[in-house]
Image (cartoon, rainbow, N blue to C red; front, side, top):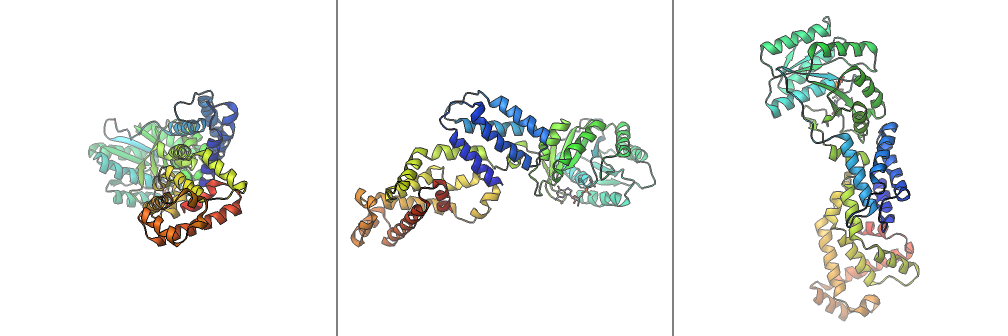
Length: 445
Ligand code: GDP
């Protein structure tokens, strides 16, 4: 999926070359791809519509400055807008209150509230040097209270006991009182979740909010929830003045589109991301990085710029036409290809820009070595005469020796290059000019 989108966008960007501004027609195809990518990342439909409309408005008629092509400019706008929609800078936890600062955790059952409560406790202890107390208001599930006790211990915080025969409101008040008397900086209140939104649950957490007057009311939501996250977010937003969002289970398969939906619907900043089941699996949310994940593109902006700046499309097209017309593929063309690969900014830097899924395999290839190889091959071809390059079949033993000496390599290396060239020539014949990019990919491993 990620690679498909990257390819599509890269192609579209190329098609848009040579056009001076972004227009209704050249933007259409590209936005369709972006829209698909967002939907596939499980962003809610109304949110996608809104987003696309905003990008379009920003993009239309925009002069494309400097060496940027309209397509590149558009990718840039999409990326920026995505990051801007999901956050503005780092939104750290707010503790500006008369101690104890109360943090209320809200969300559905299974969203990761209890786990996040403990993770947050650890974060506040380690990063903010706070004295932290936790308490569970989940009187419906005794196991939930026990669970909080266990994970609070792991976090190195203190746990305030509660039991199923108490009212959540009384538990909250008792914990608050204890926290005050024992000079806790922060009181984290875990609450009961239900499998689905229900009136009782909402009323209960509203009451808790009224009693506790929390400085932070965090909505904990499972990134895997996808489209459903929207309804949940709506219900919680209506019940509570949310001050922040924690997006959990971002380590899962989800592309994290829920981030966009939930942020758009609640208007609250995403403060943290849960990235593992472990107690230290909590990260301050990074909107810029997450934008790339949602579109499944890695650092597409940089990639697109590199690819289009580096590859001389005219030369590539000429080459393709030449092969098609049966003119034959000679060592000059082979050299041109090597040079194009090099111009793409170096293989290793190109690999860095691709989405991780794509490079997992390639990571095993030694990119530095691949680049050195290209340079050596270039050296060999450059030591040939013009005639030899056009008619490689002329290159016999004596010429090989001369070429090897010129390039400062062994004769075997010249042989290897000629073999490789022959294979490539055969491939080119088969492809009949079909797709230089395809070929380059094969060469790049
Ligand atoms: P609660 O019902 O909202 O309190 O949810 P829990 O805290 O009990 O979490 C439900 C499940 O999700 C547990 O198995 C957690 O280990 C798991 N979980 C919570 N946060 C994360 C996360 O960020 N990543 C992963 N992989 N699992 C998580």
